[in-house]
Amino acid sequence: TRDELLSLQKEAEQVTLEESLVDYLLAIVHATRHHRGLSLGISTRGALFLQRAARALAFVEGRGYCLPDDIKRLAPLVFSHRILLKGFSPGQALHGADAVMTEILGAIPVPL
Image (cartoon, rainbow, N blue to C red; front, side):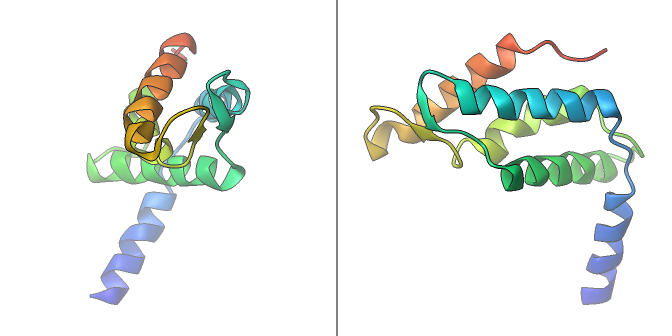
């Protein structure tokens, strides 16, 4: 029901996202804003969506806390359609966005 869904959303919002993971997420966002192949990086709103998605994934998997892998796993899914590539035609854009996200995620150290 609607009420059950809202209740589940509130429970997912209670999942812990440690400060080191917030810093990791923000480093990814910052990298999209300064990547040579992008003319538009991730907005604050996009960062908030990744945070919500990571919490929801942890909740669905039965955890009360997020892991770095939650962010790394979801970043391409949440961000690839939100970035604007330089010099790509619309047909190439999604593939190129995936490649850029893979490069960015490979360059940023995962917190331990």
